[in-house]
Image (tube, rainbow, N blue to C red; front, side):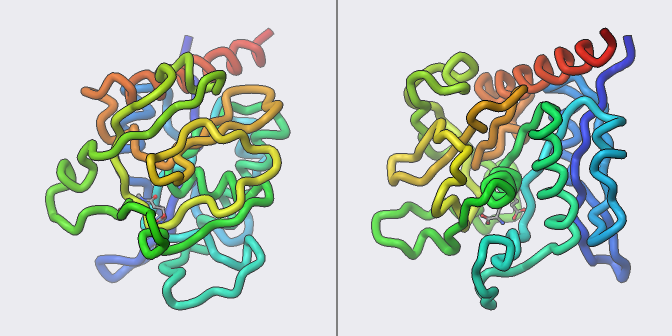
Length: 251
Ligand SMILES: N[C@@H](CCC(=O)NCCCC(=O)O)C(=O)O
C-alpha cells in the first residue's frame, strides 16, 4: 500500500531576494521518518486555498512551528509591534484547514505555532512575551547559531493523568525543548489541557470529542524524532492515526 499523505501548511517567507512558500526540513523529516507518511506542502495563500480540496487528498494535517506569530486580530486583539513578525498567508491557510480537518475527522498534529493556531482556530487567545510575566520561565529559542543547542532538551512538562498523551508519553514528567515567546492565554472551550510546565504554561492540548487524533504540543518533538523516545512516540502515534484514517476511507 502507498504511504498516507499529510498536509503541512507552509510559511510565506522573504529571503534571497524572493518570496517563498517554505516548511523547515525538520518537520518534513519527522513526517517521513517518524510518522511514515508522505508530506504535502500547502502554499501559504491569503486566499485561494480550498481546504476541502486539500483534505480530500490527504490523510492527516501537521501544523508546524514557525518564527511568525498568529495575527492578534484573529483572537480579538489589536496588533502591536511586539506581536510580530506576522504571516497572514500561513494564518489564512492553517486556521481554516485545522477547523475543517477537525470537522471531517482528519488526524491533526499541531506543533508550537501549530498549537497556538489550534487554540485560536477554536476560539482561544494567546499571550505574548510570556517571559515578561512574573514567575514565567524564559521559553524562547536560545540565541545561538547551533540548531542542536537551540532545540536542546531543557525543560520538563508534566503530562496529566487520563490525558490523550498519557498512553503515548506516560503520566508525569517528560523532558522537552522550548522555543516560543507566546503561549495559550485562554484555552478554547473544546481544548483539554494535556500537559503543563512547572511555571504553569500550557504545553499540550487535545480536542475534546475529536473524531480522530487531535493533539497540539508547544515544544518541538520533530527535531529529535530520530533519537528521543518521547519525540518518536508522538510521531508514531500520529502516523498510526493517519494510517487508521486512511484505511477507514478505503472501506
Ligand atoms: N512564534 C510563536 C511560535 C514559536 C515556534 O513555532 N517556534 C519554532 C520556530 C523557532 C524559530 O525558528 O524561531 C512563538 O514564538 O510563540
